[in-house]
Length: 171
Image 1: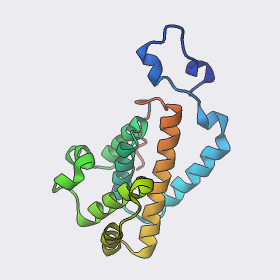
Image 2: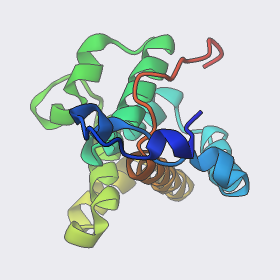
Image 3: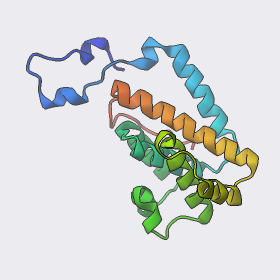
């Protein structure tokens, strides 16, 4: 786990320090992490396809520059049977034929909800999402995007240690 001592800068100021964990947020605020995990549990049980959830998590994590979550969700997706080709294509999904129309609608939705302050939610993206998702599914998809954005913000802000995540076999 991350410790405050590990987060203190060294006198040497090496390049490695820029990747040093800052705060072990799970230790410092376990109730906050439990609340965030409650959202995660809701999304996992929402009925949205697991493969779709992983694509959404991965796309938002790339957009947010969250190396910890990119590492986690590529590993989880592989365990669940996702192909390397599709994983590599998530950042450039528009230029590839590897995703279904429903997945494309979800990836577009993920992008606008993640970047909502800059883009808002254009009517054409909403209309495309509604072609492929019921009202309940669209709310659940939005909750998935909200949840991964929350995790991204925690991991990026406090520099979760990249590469440490190990997936469980029960995905």
